[in-house]
Image (cartoon, rainbow, N blue to C red):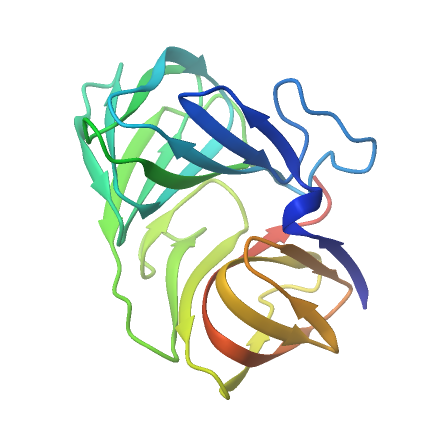
Length: 235
């Protein structure tokens, strides 16, 4: 098993005033020679957006973009005609494909909103852009699938052989994640709490990648909330 541990305070950090951004991998003006991504997982940003501010309209293409608000709410508008608000307890999926314009803004005038935005390299280019938004629960001690490659499965779907799960687990719990395919790796983003993975202690906002494993065992050291992202490693 090969591991990659990116500690919270070792991420890229940009404070623009209206936006306080932490980058797990290379993004914008942040560059680290060993942080090009994790397989097809290209971007994992942890953004705090101040009230009444946001990202103006900008383009994307040929990327699968997954946004999960951690606190607060995010207003979305795009060139496909989608317009609305995504809140904590929801996930937004956008396949940029041949090209899409969108804007994102804090839906609150005064309170900050915290989101994590994830980009995954797709397994096919030039697809028709699409948008999806779903709700998920905070049921404890169960992995909830929020993204998969299969339209008929639970959660939303993307153009990638990837599976994302959201978990809220209580202290003292243990569980095992079985990977769907041996060519994939698993990346853990711990939102809150503390996890033990094979003797490695994972703290809040750490990223932890596992390669060359069929399954991964977890011990929950403190009440925890996290995202598990199984992604292809050959992209």
